[in-house]
Amino acid sequence: MALLEIENVTRSFYGVNALNGVSLSVAGAGITGLIGPNGAGKTTLFNCISGVIPPDGGRIVFDGADIAGRRPDQITNAGLVRTFQIARGLQRMSVLDNLMLYGADQPGESIWHALVRTPVSVSREKELVDRALAIAARLNLMRVIRNPASDLSGGQKKLLEIGRALMAQPKMILLDEPVAGVNPTLAREIGEHLTSLARDGLPILLIEHHMDMISRLCDHVIVMAEGRHLAEGRFEEVADNAQVQQAYMGRRWKSAG
Image 1 (cartoon, rainbow, N blue to C red):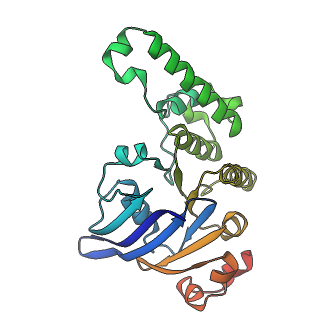
Image 2: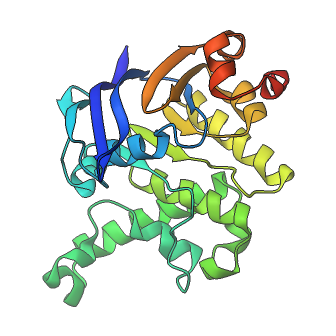
Image 3: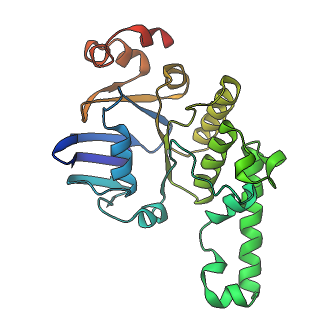
């Protein structure tokens, strides 16, 4: 059953159509890959889904509610959380503080609780610390938990980005190229973490250009080209699709399966 449904979503920039009526659905389980050549509209679609930019038209339905045009914080609070291709951690803050920053119901957001250490604020802060430490342990970040984010490697910053998304207690996460620029060893580790999260019941929609990663991780693959839905199915099915091969201008990536 679909948790996220995209219906005829359009978006243009200065008269150029980036999304030309995209319609697709994402199941409430497993890992779904969103692939396509550069310029296919994948990140623009993510931006529309997550509220970074509003769509010009169409519907975006998440967990039964139309979220098209809502603010990013409202969409995050609804349980749909995304990461970015370039990690956005606060560089001078520690890994622990970066994680805690994304926890819901922060006591410090209230002036009263921030100034007066009430039992409620102390209890909630402990909950956030415990959750952040658990996520750091799960993502193998404990050895750098006190380090500033600026000290992390590219792969560790990607893991921190995933960890910050998990702190928001999502119902689904959208990952924009989670292994881009990451060395092969950490890329494999990130893939293992994503498989583990999906196995534990967290649905994932990810954009990725590494076809070996898509073939290993994804239960279902959706292909976009020229701002439209082109094809979908198992990796082997889309790899054998002549339209998909044409969109990628060659067959060389097919061998990744």
